[in-house]
Amino acid sequence: MKAIVASFSSGREVLGRVRSRFLRMGDSSHGISVELADIPEPVVIGQDWVKIRTIMSGISAMDEGLVFRHDHFSWAPFLSFPFVPGNENMGIVTETGSEIVGIEIGERAVVDPILSCRPRGVEPICPSCARGEPSWCLSFSSGSIGPGIMVGACPETGGGWGGSFLAHRSQVRLIPRDMESDQAVLVPEFARAVKAVLSRPPAAGERVVIVGGGSLGLLMLIALEALAPGTAVLLIAEHSFEADAAAKFSRADVAVSHGPGTAFEDVAKFTGATVRYNRPGRTNIEGGADLVYETTGKGEYIEDAIRFAGEGKRLVLAGFRQPSGIDLGPLWFKGIEIRTTGFSGAVSYNGGISDVFDLALDLVRNSPLPVSEILTHKFRLEEHRQAFTAIENRAASKAIKVIFHQAV
Image 1 (tube, rainbow, N blue to C red):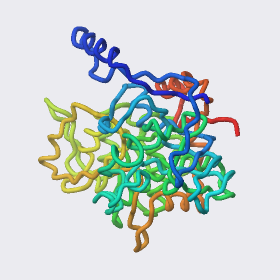
Image 2: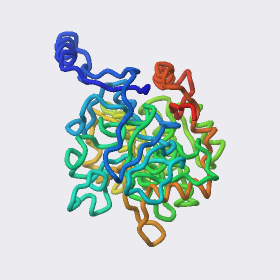
Image 3: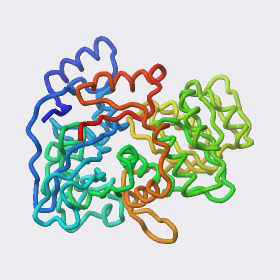
């Protein structure tokens, strides 16, 4: 089958590090390559696994890090090369293990990608999984399959950037017949937004700032409107076309940042805070938002987000990247509570405990996502270079969410 494969060469890595030292280049990995190749179909691992033929697979923030910055990510110890990327996947079930009940061949499915204790057959499950936090599992290199934190970062399972991939039955969510595939492929990222909101939901009367108007930022806005209706929200977009997209489906306040450090006046006006233009040093705010969700994962915007939060208030880091060189000074004199969030797991909702993927799927079914404003670009695997160019040059392409799609 055709697949985009991530591979690693120790020779390229050594040569790249030598060049970096003498040419003062970046410190990311030089040994990773991402190329289209012909590889064998994945083989079903066990009786409680299924094979899924890919229909659509999103290009996630983690995938972007791999392609553009050659990041090993913080979970590098759990990676095994080569592997097929793609962790935001939906497709059609084509093969099932003998113990599979309730999942039929031919059904459409979306997949929770995390390869935690349950998919790996680890017993007893680790403390993180027992708490309902599989994203922080302690068994990513144990059990019945090799190292890999998720589908799309594990050689045995494959990923959505190939013709087929594997998933454990606990990861599979069947797609309702009345849900469009374009809606379903956004569910994995929407689940991240839902989890971030429910990890630190806004209280009545609080003012909330979302940093980043990409797909995660827009989905965060939708999650807030579904889970905390009536909350005052300011979305800070990186590009004007992102702000235009948000304005088409939301009444939230929207500002365009024009780069890091440029949205302080917008935040101050929204929250009633005071901007302090320090010399020397970065601009700061006295006061600020009750709650900030940072969705870009970029170091400069994380620094802004820290400053946007009011004294003693809360910041949720939802963007997945590998930022460096962040000035954490404001944390000491603002006393901000910082929370990170994962992909999946249990969340508190309506007085009970829900699985965040199930909840996200229900929310999408009952209040469909504005796909036309979020899912802006589709490419075939053979067009991966064009897809990567659209992402790398968003100002020109106006790309928000980019996915690969394959013939049904």
